[in-house]
Length: 463
Image (cartoon, rainbow, N blue to C red):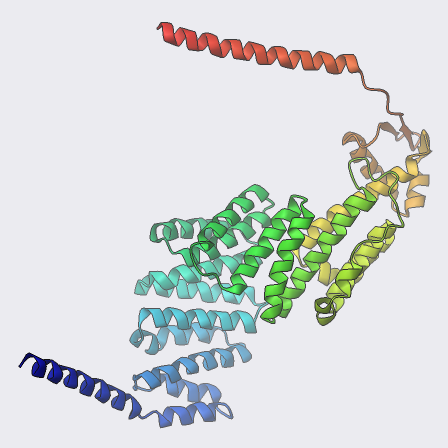
């Protein structure tokens, strides 16, 4: 009897599943499919809105409506009617019917489409995000709100509104740590690192990147996100002067992006790799240092030729790589005029990137110091106008730079502005008696400090 009951229950369950499958197969969505097909030809927005307003809510109808949302977003972006995107997101009944997880997925995909089709319209992207966040707060959609806030922080970062972005990130991180949402924690800490780097706060940027990598170790990280983490790691190492390690991180990121055919990001990584090669070669062959590169070898070629002729470099050849090659040649010749000409000719390719712009500015200052010291090295007294003529620079620029170098201790001398001359002093021998005396005082200070701490400990024991 027991076997008969079990068999009957199983048969009923199988029959029920078959009925459900049959219902799904019988779902009539022909009219929705016709509207979607006709929308590709004419009356795109009108037909897509009819699809969205359809009362059908089966599995197939939901999939078709989801496609309609994406196509409608693309249509509004093509017509530059961005305000209507938020309007249909708020008014459409589709988002009230689907589950919260599906709603979050669709809204995030809509944001990604808007960002990809209108990458320069940052103010519009910001308004859309703020309106979606307000809607999420009204509907109490915390999961979606947190992800849109992370997107908004990214937009604020690209608008160079670092303070606003950092305030939003701090508030978001406090929520995420309570929920222990590892995936969003990785992305948010990475964005925090980028913001701190934009503020030139490298220690905090490094700490945020470490937190991002720690969270990433506990979950699966998509290749695109892993490439972003590697790129940021290379950026931090470049700031610290460890160019070989930075180059290896950029290479890992480039290989992942190259496999995914992410052309724009891959070109940026390739430029960073070339920048590391240039800076590393200048450190070794030109010996740029606090002494201003006295006696550097002008003829030593920079090791960028192997990178330029590689298969990947040929694939991504263009103005970006030409700009970095021109920078390498100008740095090899230690020619400020060539260097400034490259910065002018390739302004878009070189100045739009924060890392490259910052290091090229440092490189320009180092080349200027190097050339100035090379010119004044044979003289004990030289006219400033003569130095300016040799450098082919305005006199005020030369005066300002020489005064900075004197204050920084790059060489010993004074500026006689009355006579318009630079008086250079020879570096005298160090006073060893003074150095030894200072060392003795330091040791005495250490001894007194140690005795004071011991007496303090004895008093505590006696009490």
